[in-house]
Image 1 (cartoon, rainbow, N blue to C red):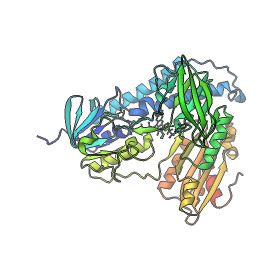
Image 2 (cartoon, rainbow, N blue to C red):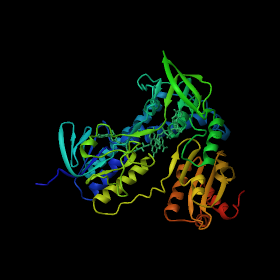
Image 3 (cartoon, protein in one colour):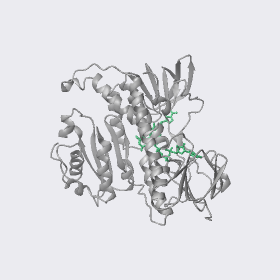
Length: 465
Ligand code: FAD
Ligand code: NAI
């Protein structure tokens, strides 16, 4: 009889966990995945990436019709919102994709253990009241919303909500206050602004989108203001109270000063996410979390406990689905005795608003701390395709090492920046110089030509400015 029930048991079926489980099974390992949610796919497929993109895509059409962008191209329509249908197509997208993971589990012979798992020892977990053993256990439990002290989230009431509640609002709020000008606040704030809400974003720092390049952050503020959002930067929320169907938000300057009160029909709390480790029984295997509640691993995604591995949002690094997926593949390959590697220096990040904001590698600020750099910039206004499509906002910015010309970071603001950034990531993965990009033939007319021209601007001059 085998010593363990499974070679690999993955806890959590988000993009990290389900990918790890499928890759482990593909590599011939007997694999199970425990998931407590009703459906597979984790935060990303159920309440994150996918439903938010469904609402962003649909609301963008509404906005284009309502704000005159379509009329400019000779299509005159007065849009009428059927929010029920918009929500239904969101739910359909989620159902289709989460069902797809269930199909892939069956196809690859991954056993889905339904329920929340907790460690009994380093090779045994309990799922419900059933004990299951495995030679290797991968923790891929993801993350949940960081609460704002003293502010109670109640998605059911639909007044003070987190991202899950904000995806499902039954009506367009008259006034919406978003606490936190990060990725979630701007994406979901944009959805409801496009559908007619008056949106105010309260951000503690003096710019939006922490972690992105300084020029990108400055431009973001201009673009979102132009689109009609009210931005209260350098401002902190000190309390939220609800009376009847209205919320009152108390804010004050982050640096100190007089308090002010804002009224709203809906308040979205989006001040970050924190790793899920409560109830996992980590104490039973002697595995501590760091100060930020994350599980630390080595380069192979092994924790300090033999046979226990961790990936995705629960470990340090950006909380992104594609980072979790790549770590899922790498950990399975490492367990199978191969060499699974993730290059954490080249993880793209994208904000899926219109325009999109995307970046990979170092910001100009971080790059300068390491040594002299050369920077090339090219405005989307001078890109023929963006101009033809009436998409004037944005730019591409390339940061290269002043001495070697090696590309250190690429930042794009453009309607399709999320797609454009893939070529930059690939170039950086191959160790490209800005000259390599400048001398690569790009199809015309495409938004991607702006990347080539920004690369030309690093050492010389672009053609079209
Ligand atoms: P998760 O997806 O969080 O999955 C973990 C799973 O583990 C969950 O299903 C949970 O139920 C389960 N679990 C937890 N504990 C246990 C247990 N003890 N036993 C069994 N199961 C357990 N990222 C992007 O890259 N692009 C985007 O566009 C994007 N949009 C987002 C939009 C929103 C609104 C949100 C909230 C997040 C978004 N993200 C996006 C982030 C992305 O969702 C996460 O980075 C990603 O889901 C992390 O994957 P994971 O596998 O580590 O964890
Ligand atoms: P975030 O970290 O992106 O932004 C949170 C913002 O809230 C920060 O700007 C912070 O300064 C601000 N803040 C914190 N406390 C505050 C306070 N008291 N008052 C006012 N502002 C305050 O976190 P967010 O938007 O909640 O997203 C969580 C995670 O989900 C991110 O790490 C992101 O990677 C992931 N995500 C990714 C998406 C994508 O890739 N497109 C989409 C949505 C989420």
